[in-house]
Length: 97
View: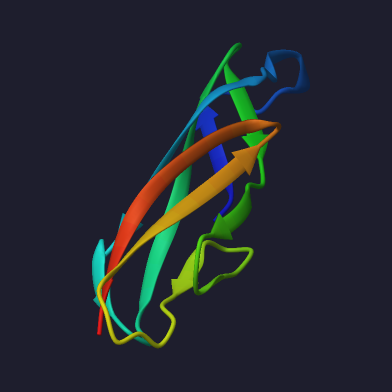
């Protein structure tokens, strides 16, 4: 999902990203289910807007942060990461068989 923080959207108030916090809901799913992940930014200045680049250690995650769990016979701990302007944030989703 689009990430943003702060108040004004005026260009003179645009800041740079200093931290990325990733949250996924739900945090525990089963094989084939989905979890929606979002990135919240901490910025210098009043506002910063950026689109995260998503990645997952297994399974797939789309440009909107929707993670789809892979088929599995064992419980997996999947690390979901968002890269925003070179700043990384991550969360864990548990995938049960």
